[in-house]
Length: 233
Image (cartoon, rainbow, N blue to C red; front, side, top):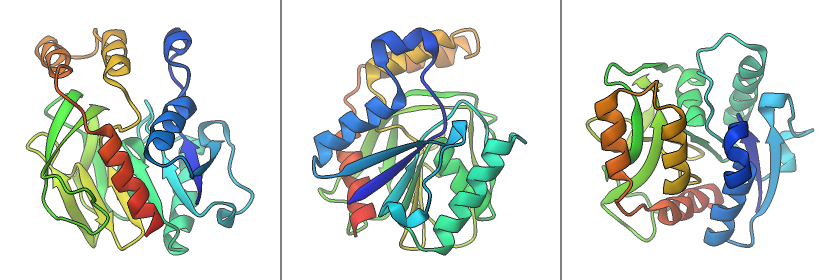
């Protein structure tokens, strides 16, 4: 399978020496899950897109510090591209910003959460066992980093996974579109550095709880296996 990854951001310049960029993070976690996957990266934040949607068998959209509600050209272009993927029934997974973009493009809503930042390792319960969720697991621990979340589901969306803080942590629309609020590509070490870079923006109690949560184990490889199973089905 050839997988197109639509990059919607870059790692902060100050953190790139230690953590490189998001393309490297995705390459590492995907190769650990399935080393037969061929990856093509498109920096959509910089205007890069495949010449044709059929160049790749499936697509993944990364996270971003931007909001899906920002009125800027590159986000508008991405909305149109995701709509084309949906209409063409291309297998598609949206991560964090990409997850929220699915909701926006398909008729839902995204808003700043009145609960504040979601940071650290979040525990989510699986509400629906799907055939691509192998091996099965009832609770998932995954790194999160977001201020916004889906506030209204798009029509026909099914909630697959969630928690009290983020009820729509994973949604599925049809058999080809999946959204995930968490970050399987993020390590806990990167999450720690990212939180410290935003320490002045995150409420003190939330920051402390987020740092403490990094002692939990994380199911990033399992989740990436699930996502690839979904894209290959």
